[in-house]
Length: 234
Image 1 (tube, helix red, strand yellow):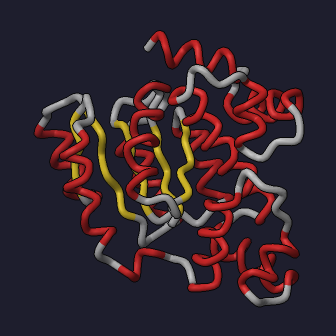
Image 2: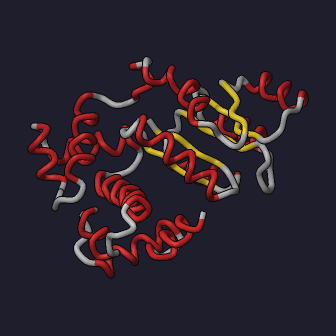
């Protein structure tokens, strides 16, 4: 399941990611700071669920929701807002919003909203083969893992797995593995402050600290040290 998180506050995005990912480890979380970034993701990935902050730069979350709904008719929209405003409520009802979350997001409220997705097999979005493949990635992301090995473990042809993976997940096997490694490295950087950057790189499947730091900065926009320092401060 592909899930879009949109908020112009990086800490709010990180909080949503950290709360959602343990509940749904197979979900792909895509983060955007504004409507332009969100629509760029929407054009590349089939989206099933979106968390939209109302107060975004450029266009409101409700306007963005309308554009997302035009591209993905079955997408579920959840509004995240610090406002208690009847005008927004009317617009949300007209748009068919699934639910509201108020800021600051409270974990128990988020869990309550997401319970329906735990009980709905139709929203899992992946076939058994792809679910098995993703489970293996989540278990062995720190090891040397390639497409041929993964295909062997799920007992199908590598070419077929590659095509099915891209069709269902929206990105290639290698892209997904890299995204998951970066995601886990972010968690390790904050949850294990005693680990060196080199240790984090090794524990998340990167061949060298230099390569890890280069990829991390490209994806996250900060070096691993900058990300850790900011997390410790906040």
